Amino acid sequence: MLAEAPSASKFLSEQVVRGNLVAIDRVCSVEPIVVDVAKALDVVPGMRRDLLLHAGPPISYERACGPLRRALGGALVFEGLAATLDEAEQLLASGRVKLSPCHHHDAVGPMTGVISPSMPVLVTEDRNSGKRAYSTFNEGGGNALWLGVFERDTLERLCWIRDILAPVLKAVFKAAGGVPVWTILAQGLQMGDECHNRHAASTNIFLKSITEHLFLASLPRDTALAAYRYISGNSHFFLNMTMSACKLAMDAANDVPYSTMVTAMARNGTDFGIRVSALGGKWFIAPAPHLKDALYNPGYGPDDGAPDIGDSAIIETMGLGGFVIAAAPAMAAIAGGGLEQALSISRRMGLITLAKNVRFPIPTLDFEGSPMGIDVRRVIDSGIVPSIDSAVVHKQGGIGQIGVGIARAPYECFGAALEAFVSKVDRRS
Image (cartoon, rainbow, N blue to C red):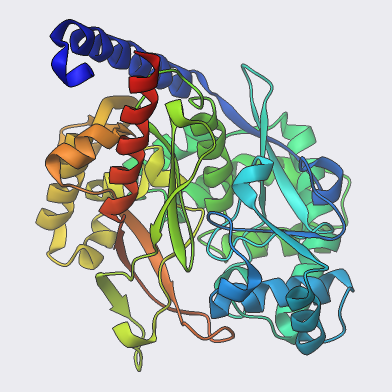
């Protein structure tokens, strides 16, 4: 066994160091550009007419939380496969419509993360490898599918995004030659975004970068103006592009022998799962946590919230979001102790990561690069778990967002992953 063979242990240690250096290098080599808009059925790998994608690791409809169930049902109404939510529920319960995680299809979705065949998706491409990742359009607040709500105005908004906004942005991306994501996020970070719960600066920078193309395109003025107003009125609009870019970067680090780096964290409102580079596509799962530090809307409290949900933790997996909360003074209140606590969180995340990403310097930490490359060994050794900035949705589908806060990844996922890693390298030795 390795424990009885110091020379073998040293060799293994060197292999892990080399593996993690390769994984970090692969992440840093990715240059994500938003290049197109297309129908999910036409471009998302493995998408079918009888398939719905969702956030987080795999889950059955029977185990899905209220917000996810509502969003899945709403998607079937949007597709015209059900006339009502009751009909949709019967269809889902029958198993005739299949469910699959977005992550299994080169895609990501915030909160409920539901992607249906007819939905338009943003196409993000790595300039260097040509690989692509996909995400839906961000619907904004209120009665929105991603927040577990489906009402008449939800359907109207989804149809408007499909019929009006998607063709507009398809033309804009073509005219602009694509929009580079890292450039926008790096600027946003210097302007108070932590690139997860706060995307106000990044969205404004994105809008500025496309405005000329928007109004010079051969579009009716009213259509261009409606698109401009929609984006400017939704401070989370750039979130979904951030997620697909982070998905591309972290997927580049998959399947590196001996690498202990986490390549995905995701939640479906019931389970929390992680993936580790050397362990392929296997999910290591624990119950999804409730948000410990949260600010609730008036009339709501901790007992009202669903467990954490969404693929947006791919942002923290990349080393942004909760890992750089020190850069976002406006977000400090949700840290529970103001700016000093936010600084402490970012420093602690540096203790469980493998490198500093100089592309994303943190102003309040003397422009130190963002902590990147979560290492399962360091999580277990330190007892520190990833901090994830998130939103709280009501546990009953149909009510929507009731607050914002911080979720802490369950320690058990990392313990199970490290055990599997040790078992795998033991078999190789």
